[in-house]
Amino acid sequence: MTPILIKSATVVNEGSAYPSDILIRDGFIERVDPEINHPGAREINAEGLHAIPGLIDDQVHFREPGLTHKADIWHESRAAVAGGTTSFMEMPNTVPNTLTQGLLQDKYDIAAKSSLANYSFYMGAANDNLEEVLKTNPKDVCGIKVFMGSSTGNMLVDDERTLEGIFARTPMLIATHCEDEATIQRNLAAYEKHFGEDLNVAMHPGIRSAEACYISSSHAVALARKHGTRLHVLHISTERETELFDRDIPLEQKKITAEACVHHLWFCDADYAEKGNLIKWNPAVKTAEDRAGILAAVRSGAIDVIATDHAPHTREEKNQHYSQAPSGGPLVQHALLALLDMYHDGRLTLEEIVQKTAHNTAICFNVAKRGFIREGYWADLVLVDLAKPHTVEAGNLLSKCGWSPFEGHTFRSSVNRTFVSGQLVFENERIIETTPGQRLLFDRD
Image 1 (spheres, helix red, strand yellow):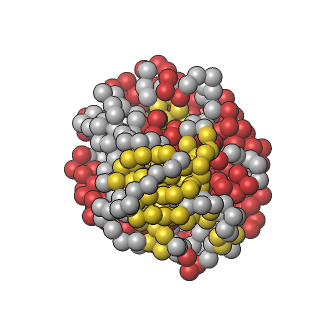
Image 2 (cartoon, rainbow, N blue to C red):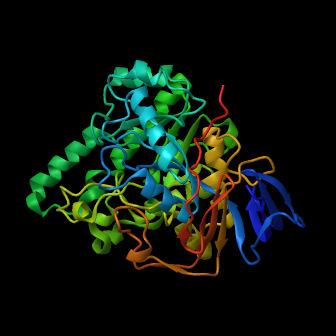
Image 3 (tube, rainbow, N blue to C red):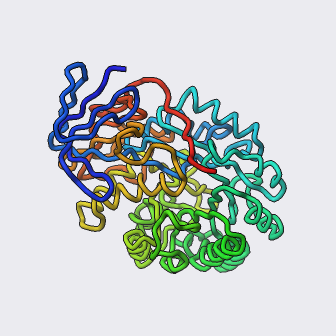
């Protein structure tokens, strides 16, 4: 590999922003210094650009195998790198559900051939596969996923003895989807009785309510405290849930951590009138007060990570009646741009964005040699132009589903280039076909 020398970038890393050059050799960051000269390197002029670590998205649904009419690893990994996400961790509710070590390996085999981004896959837990879960290797698998709320296939874990067993016996990180199923079903029955066929998406946050989220999240936290489990609660959607998490100790010392998603930081229930089912997610987008509370928790340290829950469906599926339309939507191509708009609005700093999307994800999951701009680390890097707008249009969407809840929006920043493990994979608004990304490894005992 020809060395690459990034010249005159503003590096945003580990709480600071400073001018520097970056030398990349054989996939790694060899040197970070204000003045580097290397006659044999390919030089990239980054004057006026900001260099940040590539985003590590700890929650995506790339739909392969079994649901590839919606998405697949090839398409979605390209959307990821176009948006500055260089590594992803993908969920087990594919078809078949990833409930055995063999099915988990099948996904790694697919990614090794087709993913442009670095990758990892969660092992799925169900009511009847604890012994299989316990075979998972913590050195090369990101975590165990537990759905404590209804999902696709045989993934709802609602047996209390099973939950106790998972939390008591699993030695590695457990990531949870927390919504109390009994509360949801009770809410749904009440809404159906009152509204019948007039149910619509504006009722979604009432059905999948704040109460359902809090009951389940508090249950997961209680189980983790009881058993000393390493717990990571995904997609916090209510202000009240943020009270469950510690903001007063260093992240490295936390055993219970939490994630917020871009859509819960961007949208609120007032947006259902315009966006409809396009912003139907589980957990639901809720009130403006919840949105503000989640942002405050991100900034205070109660919430540690920002991710996407990228979960494509076809436009035809989304255009169905509310009760039939699936939850989820494509976000990975525009997550960084949305956060940079929040920077322009004064809601987040650049340093906070980098911390919550790269540094903290690497720390939470013990990702080996990624998530920071450090000498000796893999060169997962993004150059962003804070002054060049990017309009989301059908013609520049890379997710296979072909739509975005941001379609028509002009972001104030754009991704200039993306490097994955030292390879330049995105430049001048086009994908550069190169060798696949790498399997993520984890520094765990």
